[in-house]
Image 1 (cartoon, rainbow, N blue to C red):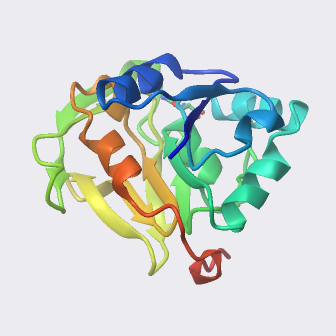
Image 2 (spheres, protein in one colour; image 1 turned 30 degrees about the horizontal axis):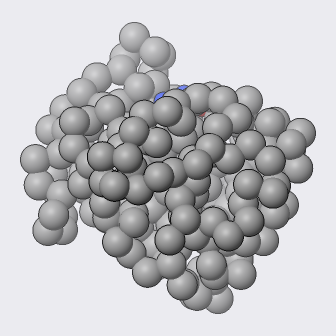
Length: 198
Ligand code: GLN
């Protein structure tokens, strides 16, 4: 296993620290060569349009998508990272379309509308999670292959699909490393053909 955290803009250090607590030495990813040999990559929170632009500028967007589609790179999108993974919807920023779901930016309002709340886990191992929502997006319509792992009220906030994990909150700031542990524990091999991204 070789774990990376995209470190172009946003909150990469807290993810590296979470993996360190789990005994995994994660490396920061800034250039295409940093993807070599990587099995897991976090797309952290930050500002999704800025991260999109920097992915293009540093030539990372195409190799990242290619590595994912080849089935040997597992992705974890957090907040801005989840926005980027979502379905293309014609709005800024352009999405990578690797998660079969709509992800609406800034769906709770402005930065002052950030909040933390206990979440409802739908699977074992994620009980007692606290959601830290920072100018968070909301997940909208999800494809059949997307499994909801946790909710805030009725809203899905943590979802999983073949090769992808996405959180609209910040698990790296929540005081629990359970979500990161789940990311590492899942099979790396996935079947991109199972993805029906429309
Ligand atoms: N509001 C940010 C965006 O739209 C995401 C916020 C975050 O990552 N915490 O990109």
